[in-house]
Length: 310
Ligand code: PGA
Image 1 (cartoon, rainbow, N blue to C red):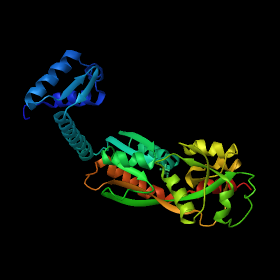
Image 2 (image 1 turned 135 degrees about the vertical axis):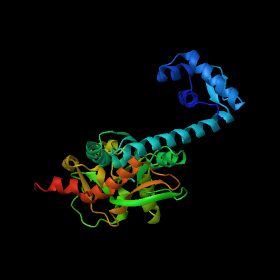
Image 3 (image 1 turned 90 degrees about the horizontal axis):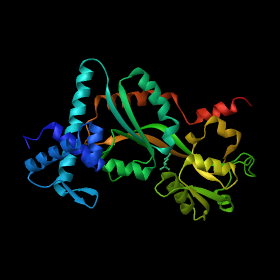
Image 4 (image 1 turned 90 degrees about the vertical axis):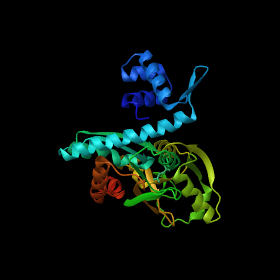
């Protein structure tokens, strides 16, 4: 492999990722025959086919899969090296890959805004998704940092809790329970509920609390987003349990939080990364920034803002 060039590896990685010689040529701004010849030379060096073409579809062989994961390691090391050099020169630059859980989008983008003002050369990629997908991304080592409320037990992670994540029962503003105090959980059985999709931690929490108390939940509707659920609650389709962070101050014009026993359920947000992973300079800088900045933030801020006028 000592004869393989970095350029060949780059061509290979691009082709594998895009599953097409033509698209790889486009992305790399080189000619398609160049892609083919680079792959051919690399195949000779390896001594085994890297791709298999079936019909129009390009597949990686086992050797191709192995080489692809080796390429990821090599490129990650090189990226890291570039960041370290930039850091030695006194600038923070490079790429930051983050995945945050759905409810994190009410907080993290703003924090990234202020972070990027201090470090304008940092290039950020932010994915927002549910717990199941984050778990998947962790297994594939896709990101530098993951922000979520239930770090999986089966993956070796470094974790730091940094912010309260209260889950509350949400109803339309003039709901008949809206003025009652300490509503027994069993009363919720009489109302239809809107649940998040399978794979969502919020959904799991609701099921668990009903199961633990031997209560039946009436599921009216399933929706794949917290925003859609809020609209459905306003539309009178049912109640739901949501992270308080999803309730921005304007929501309180049309929604309210019910005072139900055992609620709020107190979870935390964790910032995590794979234990074996050496954090890049940029990822470490963001992690430190997050831990400091989040001290000034709580989920109650929006609630307080909405209620301060009354
Ligand atoms: P979920 O998690 O999107 O998987 O439901 C949200 C949360 O834990 O706040």
